[in-house]
Image 1 (cartoon, rainbow, N blue to C red):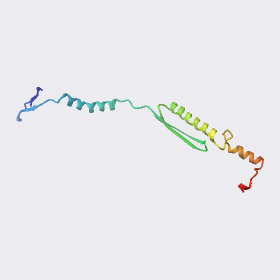
Image 2: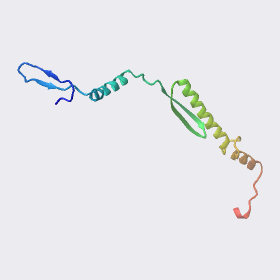
Image 3: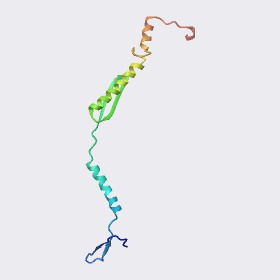
Length: 124
């Protein structure tokens, strides 16, 4: 079967003549792809990043653990500091026990220790 392509004729002693058609260009390209992918994987530079972690106690009365993946430890620590600053800001604004909060229980407790609360019969 010859469609205008060259055939290879192999003459081996003791064996009949073997006619082999060379692979098509599409077949050759398909065979190259796995080798190219392997070469890319072997010569690719590894990603340079690292895990950065910090554990802080006492924000909102609980332990805060921040763990992230960063290009460098300095970048990671800077991002962690931003997270902890936001946590402290929320804690200062929303805590019901801190004097800096909008509605602190601590001020109500201080007022109650300085004077008595009148109670109505509906609360008795």
